[in-house]
Image 1: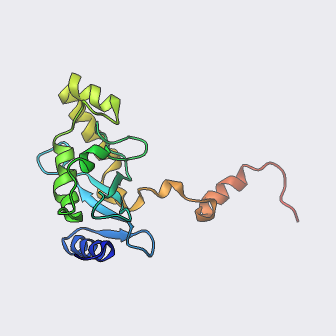
Image 2: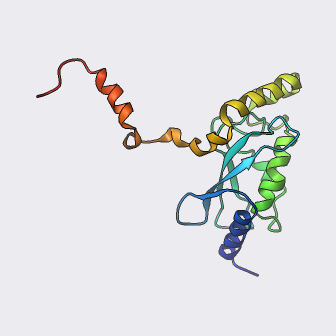
Image 3: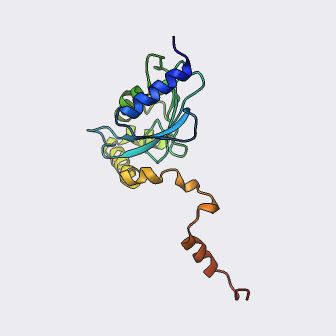
Length: 183
């Protein structure tokens, strides 16, 4: 039986080798981003999301924590935090699964078969049950607005600090200051 850290390394390497774009968050192998495409033949087709993955110390015996960084309209995904309804992964998780399963099975199944009876986004769940066509239209609008391929690189950057502001942003602030500059 291999150690959880060896298994974590193996699963991460397997994910990186299976055509997923993986971006490490820090030096450890416990937190990273993965680029995820919406499943074909679904209202999410064409959408690209940056998924934040956190592996618990007990991985693979405990399931990874998974959340959408850029917005998605879905009954089982919290619209503000992007966190995925934990039951989706936790109920079916087993150490036999790996990270590739999360991106090739769990997340596509979540998007293809939402569960409006156990929502994290009550508005999406209600709309889905009341008017499936309007729900799918709103999903497509969110894809168009928040999940274009170029959005993946900027997702999560809204939390930038003042130090990361460009000179243009500083210049516009200076113009609004009344009075004359100091000599």
